[in-house]
Image (cartoon, rainbow, N blue to C red; front, side, top):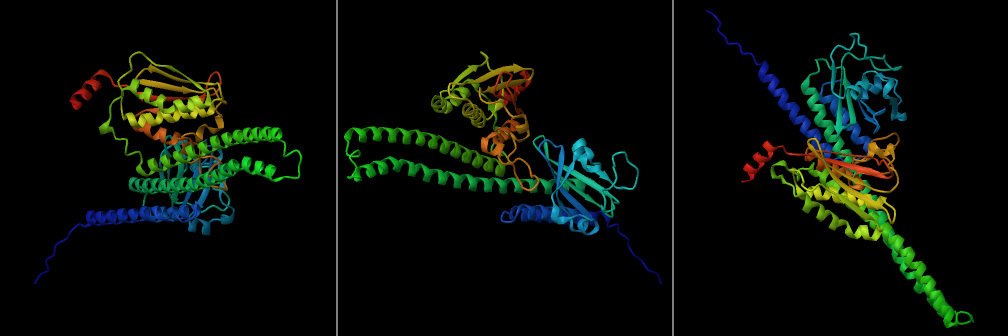
Length: 452
């Protein structure tokens, strides 16, 4: 008599099953996040943080939002276990931490990449000790999330029983990118509602203005006891004065209403590009750009605004344009938006410039205005859909990138492999610089062959 058996190593199968289950869990979390539009910002952030802790099998975690200049971390959310183990005052959040005073938390900004420490007790020059009452850590990992070139979220987790690895980084990146999209979409929707309500109030105000002259003159007509009101000459004088005053006020109100309408359009465009992630700008359909025709269309798009504002446009372009691949319609949106903003920022009788030059491997287009100098403090906000998740509120007073259209221009230019930035003009006003990559001769020949 004997026993016979077979042994199988099921380690790989178990790992595959766990990975499949983790992928499904992550997809469920992302799906629920997208459905949380009716929840408050804090509830959405808290949910994402708790799921980040669960997905990485951690015990503690936090979510922080850097200010636009990345000098300060705004801590908005700690895991429930962190609150239980720390002497954190949950009611006093968010907490503010200057980056230069932080240890490992600040490394996400200083190094601008994920970090894993699986043995937290080992000595490190990066550590600056624990805040008073902080939870004890055995392991730690953080991941910075970028929007363009700026860090917008930092997720940190700790105390996983096993070691953190690249899969944990990948899962946190996907989850936090999903969170940032939800935050942007929710804030844009709220701003769109606010601006739409302002426009409705503005329309009611404008309508009431149009009734003032007629009501005023009717009152004079009905005042039969007044000897003055019966004077035809006085009535003509008053009629002219009232109508002129009303006309001026109406013109001002109309300009304000048009500005509001333009902001609503930019917000709508921002929401569209956010939901599409710029996918309507696809490299495979890029063709050689006819810049001469492109700029002619752009100037036609803006000619009425330039005339109404009494602003002149000075165009200086090279005789021969370089070879650039792109989507003409999308780039037309970019340059139309930039010229409109330059016109709106310039005073009556001012000038805007549209200048194109070749610089190394790029075609550089500069759009300058003669308005107020660009505020350096606003530079970090210019191309962001929303400013930042700040202390005490979740947005700045103005949504610079979303309401000015600059958020959309950034998406389009980055899809073209280029760059866009704003800065103070050397003389006065501001200037926006668009850089688009130029095709070399080999690339241009390959493009011609593909199109043939």
